[in-house]
Amino acid sequence: MPAEMSGRAEVRASVAARRPRAAHIIGQNIGLVLAAAILLLSIIVFVAMFLIQQHRLPGNFEITSTVDNTMPLALAAIGQTIVVLTRGIDLSVGGVVDLTNALAAIYLAGSFTHMIVVAILVILVGAAAGLVNGLLVGLGRLQPIVVTLATLSIFQGLAIRVLPQPGGTVPDGVTAFLVNTNGPYALLFLALAALGWMALRRSRIGVAIFAVGNDEQAAIAHGVNAVRTKVIAYTIGGAMYALAGLFLAANATSGDATSGNVFTLTSIVATVLGGVSLFGGRGSALGSICGAFITTMIVNILFYAHINPLYQSFYEGLFLIIAVVLGAAIGGLVRRGRA
Image (tube, rainbow, N blue to C red; front, side, top):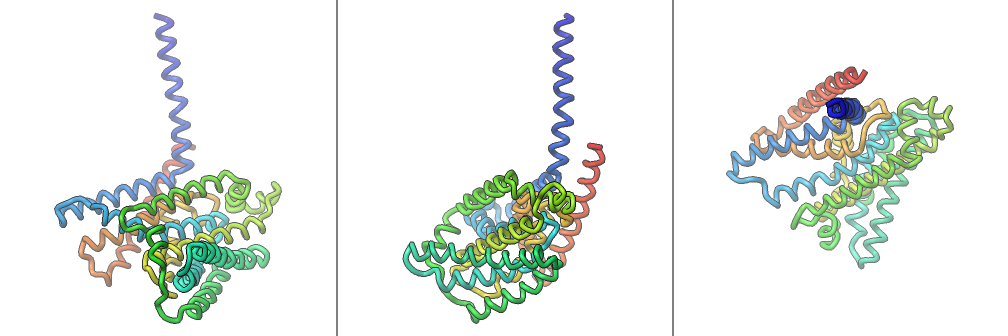
């Protein structure tokens, strides 16, 4: 009997030890947990509304369309997240997407080798745009909101110069590879992006990004090169915006030098919905991916709710405020509970 009682006591002690650890993990990733919960709720609401109106569950077409339409925003949100984690913000997203979208629509057509080279060059153009932002913010010590607002106008002007009118042609092979309409295969690219994020998070530069965002002076005192960290963060962000431009061109099969403008705001919306702190140092690109899908699901829900398109922006903004306030309140409760 004593041995049996001792064994039960050990089991209870083990369970009690695991609970604080689980609570700690949830508390550390509360933004991601809340984003996943909101995404799940939005999917349930959408499926219920679709079932009521169409008398069937969403099929391959609906799922594929949702994934393909979300891909550019998800990639842009990942780039925005990396910048925001350094306690910065990038308003040039729309301009970079415009420019790379226009370049892709004009120059992608050609042989397989030609398309690969052009795609790489387009991504490098985006990275170069991010590098400019990073140098101005890091070396120039200028306010990110001012710098990126200025470069937004510059990149938009360049995009109009490259493609004055909507047009160009994206080869069918590129469209089939990036956004195949036969199924949600674009999720594979999103999985690669998520793996890339996790690798970055554990790398030296990833640790530096979080350190600079949490406390730049403390990070510098511990040997972190804050300027280099910011430059790299903005450069990676620019490359992600270029990828968003490529996917946008592939989805539309053509280019438009103004089609990326909306991503300036929506990339920030997806980042906030994903639980990333605008004060830097806390958040995850995985949450921002969830935020991008939440944004798309909101649009779908409003469509099936027969909301007048003129009022959709109002309801989207209202939902964002409610989600952010609830997220902050729940996150605060969890952190106080841990304390």
